[in-house]
Length: 300
Image (cartoon, rainbow, N blue to C red; front, side, top):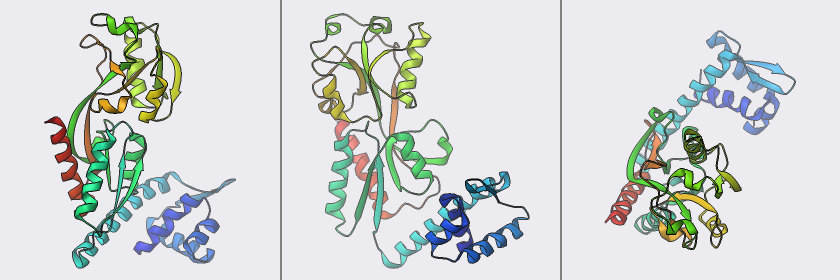
């Protein structure tokens, strides 16, 4: 088997058929069919089956493709590392960061990196943390700045940047600001701006309410990402929302409500995340250093 056979094989489920995969690869359909047959002959099992929608992996094929993706990522990493050693080329850093991360931390580090490394290039992606870690695992990103993943954590290597906690925010004129330490029950009748149900933060909030027999929060506005501009929808209203306490300037003047300790535990750890065993270019390594320096400066 040749390494290019793995590339050909992985293109089939990506495009859904041998014909479309061959076209995308610039191959003839018979050539791609022969490559698949070579791999299947060595595996000793059929890896794909035809369906009404094209080609789909068999059960054995799905397992094989999972390992083939890992092999291809390792091979690509090895080539990048060798190229860096041979040419000293800085290349491209593909960096993802979560909307819930203080944007100034990431952008300040990017500016400093570009000043230091004029030949370096950046490709930035601002996505939800789950999307970022999926892209990281797929080899589409080199580095991610996001809350440290709780699931499949052994697939990632992380450098801790800072510990953060989320808080319930409201307009400064909200009547709850005039009361003493609040229980979650005091918020049961309030209306909220919250992320969609598939986002971990929303799941944590819903679970905390249910555990106290309060039902789920009364949702007025549901959003699909954590853009700080959306806090303007809360300003001047009696809506509540949740955000990190690290970057108060980004909250549009909203203030944290005084919740009793333990009522809503939304602590999280923010880190620079990469794939376990992945090659980190000098550009990526320097970005991690700059992010750590920026985090330490803000703590100070």
